[in-house]
Image (cartoon, rainbow, N blue to C red; front, side, top):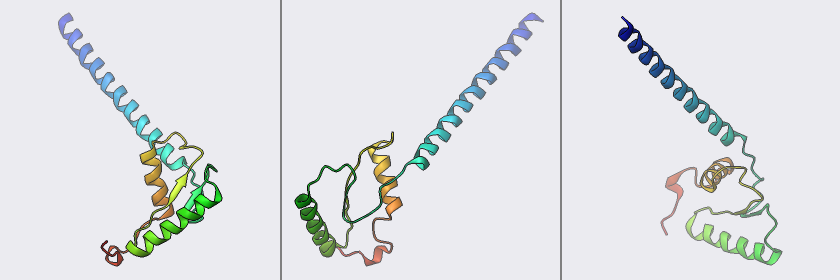
Length: 115
């Protein structure tokens, strides 16, 4: 009888560990989702957005001209952005979320020209 009791105890402990692991995983997913939704983005003010204030005016102007030329030749949209902070996100995630927020790119792929 005692051996059976231990077996049931082990099964109960295994179930409790699995439940705890699932709970921790769910909390992590919710936390990462909350971080993604909590990001704030600078306004899209042109082809060069210098939120960090690291570019001088001649550099911004030169970049604006080059980016406008690129867009006219390719219909591709490219924005140069400097930031004060990634707000705890990876650069890949922040960049992806920023592009979606700003809606950079062609809405209709058939309007894009080949290089």
